[in-house]
Length: 475
Ligand SMILES: [Fe+2]
Ligand SMILES: [Fe+2]
Image 1 (cartoon, helix red, strand yellow):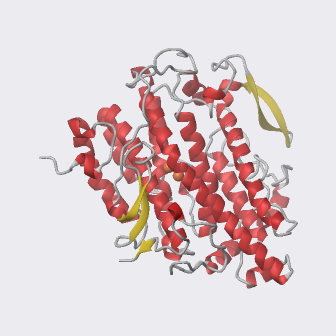
Image 2 (cartoon, rainbow, N blue to C red):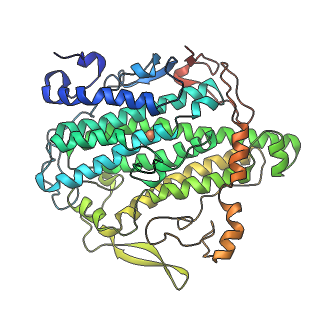
Image 3 (cartoon, rainbow, N blue to C red):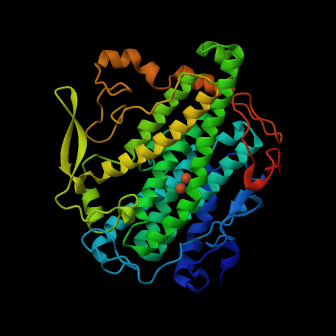
């Protein structure tokens, strides 16, 4: 006997109501998902009713329905963007052939690995963010945190759907393992480095959602080109939700800057100590947080030269960002791309086969997109008459992965000695004192319309509600 009313409980457009195999797999997995949510999801939130957006279908009326719900009862759904039965593979060796509705045997292991790696990041970020609700700077921000958390939960569902539907028994095992690894765990950590870092405070959260959710955007965009049509359609729908996560990061940092600039102008000072004493976050600390999150995030794109990246592309599993808008031959054989290496202590460019450099191509696309938002942050400072500007560090700064790993480099891109690195590190990356200071500002402010002193209110509320709307009802 089925215990779940599928279309009610699990909104979907994958015909779940008729698919017994998939139902059985989900019936096994869903209770473990709820245990996972209870164990490592948002702390102390069980009885809150949160003004959340839920996707109940992929059409414009259905993808964003708002209402107060308990997060445990959130209707995590399974959605694929509408398909095109005639869709053709548009890059790699199988260019021009029909897109695959099933997993080709020869690509099974690689596709599973790609899906598991993407899937692993989704619950990881919920784990990283689990304590933040206790120190929310406002009810509005608390709601945005929870919205992101439930949507990352839904992104996990999206990947688990693919594993259950297309990978049989080992897919089910991988789906279980996604609930067993834990961010930062010594013995069973998440797969990728940035997803084992802490997100200790709200400045880190905004930087994470600006930079690291943007890595998500680029990975999902590359997978949205895939010859494996269910993966392409799932990730396309996930991208609609990702936009909000990056908005939370971008507007969050803007609001922090706006408050800092106001304090600097009030006190007519750029002295970090005075800004801090007035309860705002000094620009140096914001820059150091930016340096950290940026460098950790660009590592997520992987080694600058990678034979796997070449295989994933040539076999049609993972395209480039906006593959369809590019005007080359979409096979890239014989083409080259510039990557960096260190020779005799100096950075040099070298030309390598483009197919092997596709991680670097995606990283460079990400960098362009990131810089655009940093420029918008600088507009906040400019408008306030503050001469300081934020910058993204050089792409070789603080890298742990690829040819640049372990190189000591200043944020401007100068190779430095071990001694200089040690002497300057505290200017370039957040220090224990920075973290302690930011932590000292984190107090819970959750009366409707009230905001912590280190952050400005948003320009408008969510879904045309006022800023002082009751976004969370505490149970
Ligand atoms: Fe996600
Ligand atoms: Fe996200």
